[in-house]
Length: 221
Image 1 (tube, rainbow, N blue to C red):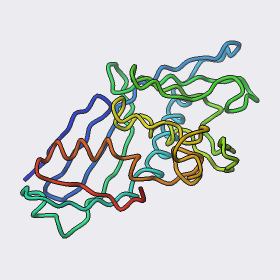
Image 2 (image 1 turned 45 degrees about the vertical axis):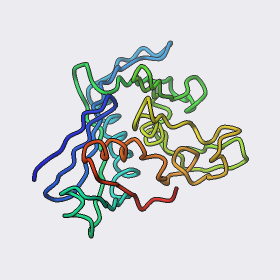
Image 3 (image 1 turned 180 degrees about the vertical axis):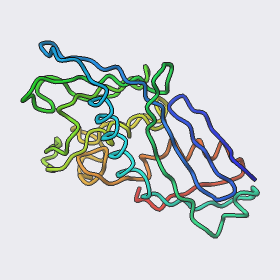
Image 4 (image 1 turned 30 degrees about the vertical axis):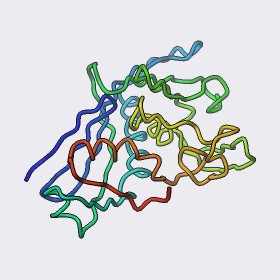
């Protein structure tokens, strides 16, 4: 027993077959951009604070929330079929391309709102994430069904778009007409809670990694 590793275009999934743990890590290469009119350059300390905030938010929302159970005829399933398999998620600051994701972070003018000038988003086919410095603190957000929150976190939401992309790309659930529009607690809507559908890319990769094994999560659908 040891480690089984799936190297996906969007990240790396490491299954520790000795301890029965899953670790998901994405390498992010940052492009530190200045919004038009902003003249003060990025300092290393500012860059470090941005990455630390993103990393802690992703860990806080995604890690230690998922418990997998396994069944099947594989050696792994036979060993861990009566236990739970925890899953943790991480963002690693990669200082050189190529990385799983190129992350363009825009330094915004003082007083700019989180969506006044720039909207954070993910381009799954190009493996690009766009964020801005005004959109990294908890903020209010609303969906097209009338739901709202005062503590939306952008970075973990955008991270959700990267999981499994592009084949299992998660759409924004706050848009009109989305099947999950009224699930306002969902992270991919305006909430902070994970759903089984959010980790389908991880489950699919794990089942390719360990044939004859079914991974099921404790999350609601």
